[in-house]
Image (tube, rainbow, N blue to C red; front, side, top):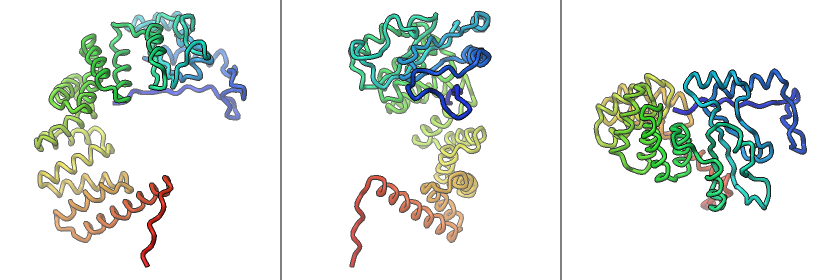
Amino acid sequence: MRPFVTINVAMTADGKIDTVERLGATISSALDWERVDRLRAESDAVMVGGHTLLGDDPRLTVKSSLLRAARKARGLDENPIKVGIISKIEDPRAGPTLHDESRFVTSGPARRVIFTTKQTDPTQVARLRELVAIVPSSAKAHLLLGEALDNTSESELAISELRRTIEIDPRLPEAHYALGYALLRKGETDEAAQRLTEELELNPRMTLALYHLGKINFNRGNLDAAISMFSRVVETEPDFRPGLEALGQALLKKRNPARAVEVLEHAVNLDPSWPDGHVLLGRAYMAIGRRDDAKKEFDTAQKLSREGRKRIEEKVGRPKSPERP
């Protein structure tokens, strides 16, 4: 399950968000700033990009004392987590960067998280860790960091952060799923299945946990369990194509082609340009004796595959094969 994200942009009537000098233009009114403050107070985290972070040095805190008090009354920190994304962090002597007097660092109280890339020198990463160290008791901050590390293929670090998340708050929504998915990507399916099951105990309608647990059961040959889980997935998310595909494959393997046809027809209608879907549907048609329909699906799949290869060749500039005489 993905987080709910709100994008907030101040823009002029003619579509401008800054001046050509990119020095920061005052567009919002006092009334709009109040709205932004309310939006910030309702959020778990506020994220900005590198240009804003270094150029504007934002505080990213809730201005209203009443809104901060309301957050505390709900059991939250006074301010949401501050999140910055910078492709490359420079040495302080080389240009604008974060330092120990930056408002992003000093304004608070608030937890701070910085995401960067391998373009950043390790010494600058170490310096930043000192400036924006994650509060050890923040389960949500560890979850954010763990998911970010997993997305950059830092699996060992990701798993470590996600285990720490669950140690702090075993009932945090999506924490067991995030750890299960990271373990699954690493090939540790036994513990992954355990963690996904734990997520479902907390949130039985967690579609992605059901889907991946169904895939584990399918790969282990537990078709009845897999079909049950994939069926629950598509009941919750009727247009979730990977769930429909997985259910169709499991039904075909279970020799239930009539139901597979129904499921795969819906999947192909959702995405007519999906070659593999047409192949699966063709196999289901063949299994119930609809040979003409099966041939049409196989022909469509071949046509779509040829068109896809042609687009790739044109994109990469691959020379065409010489025509035979």
